[in-house]
Length: 119
Image (cartoon, rainbow, N blue to C red):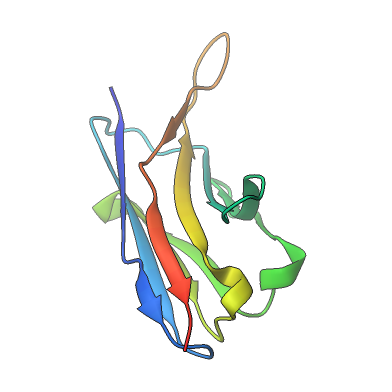
């Protein structure tokens, strides 16, 4: 069973930066998909960034140029570098890892890490 743990959230002032980490344990396989989502109070879950095993990357429009998703396979870790943070980036951020599987590719989610952007 894969376990996913996020870390790195916290309180930061507008314009600041944070780096979120997502560490997977329980599997030596490389995920075929790695994604960060976020959910602000009273809002729906929103996909922020996606990275596939072949290197394709997608960003939600509002974070383009400010957020960067990356991975370190040796450390089984996915990162989300967030810069020029805005109050509207405040949310709980979740990591989702997708692995190869049949008949469907299983997803594993972390418990989330709170990011608060406020002065």
